[in-house]
Amino acid sequence: MELFRCLVGLVVVAGLARDGSAQHYWPLQKNQLPAQQQPLPLPQPAAPSDKCQVDQANRIQCGSADSTADLCENLNCCFDEHQCFYGKAVTVQCTRDGQFVVVVARDATLPNIDVESVSLLETNDPSCSPVDITSSFAIFQFPATACGTTFQEEEGYVVYENHMSSSYEVGVGPRGSITRDSHFELLFQCRYSDTAVEALVMEVIAVPPPVPVAAAGLLRVELRLGNGQCLSKGCVEEDAAYTSFYNPSDYPITKVLREPVYVEVNIMARSDSNLILNMEHCWATASPNPQSMPQWDLLVNGCPYHDDRYLTTVVPVDASSGLQYPTHYKRFIVKMFTFVDQSTFAPQRDTVFIHCATEVCYPSSTDSCEQQCHRQRRAAARRASSSQRDLVSSGKVILTEPRPSAANTKSKQ
Figure 1 (cartoon, rainbow, N blue to C red):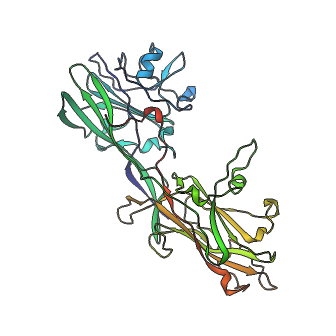
Figure 2 (figure 1 turned 90 degrees about the horizontal axis):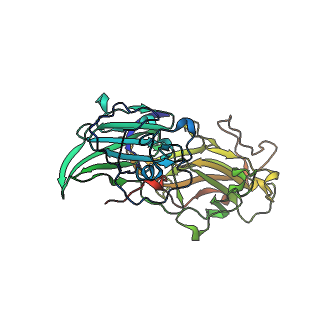
């Protein structure tokens, strides 16, 4: 599988700050922010409980060392009675002397952002690179007139606007291409007037919202998705997921990139304990038609598609599962992805349909019906009937956007 790195936007959020001094703050160091920032007071959205759960070693100081709790809150940062620091979000600030300050947290979205891939539009100018990158944050500081910033006048404000982006990785297969990395775009502004300085998110372009999953399979074989959750200490997520399943009334079902999709295929209404269900081939498409392109393999001869960086996980189903006929079931876990254009590698399809070509097999003296992943082919088994070899498909699984930090998400003002 070939891997490519492609540019995409990054979900970020806005803060608000004002600086009365004429200082320049290059370079911005860890545990240090432009000194003496005086923020404009704005009501703050409710913060998620974990936004400020930043390890002491990873904290980057926000505001001056003597910042008060109120000042820290107005800067959209976190305060713990000893220090004002950036939380697990993305914060945009503007200074009086015409500087953007942007701090990007790895944990700002799910899946997490690769902070080393974050960049501005003007990537060829070394001064537009991050002034510091840690394992948890990327820190940018640059003049409002540089790094591809555009300029306009609007209703008493001088407005500077820029665009921040991150890269994503594309896996290229023989019949389609996918990505499991976040892909978003952000436009943000610094707005200056005689009396105020504002930082503002103008537009966030994210993945469209989602729809369902499910499906009655043909010829008494069905494919369904597990939705059970671990609710007790010591619970195994893989086991709990298959204790309950999505119903038609649950649609639409939403998933984010890399989130597990728990798939179960089973023989319906059969009580013959000798029957063994096997997966010949499982794959995904962007439309309900199993023959449509693009496609992405999930299982080949019942085994994980080896050219997928995030291998499909086959979940063993045996007597410990509590099922009356364990051999009537197959389970596997797929990490959610989205299809991308084969030529441009731009994310194109957010809808995924899962298909499996199944075989119901009777063991014999010459064929145990067991699927072994080191075998490329196995002898044909004597089947229970011609009706027990067929294709089953899921309903729609549509990608939803990663969950950004709510404390820093602002609507257009």
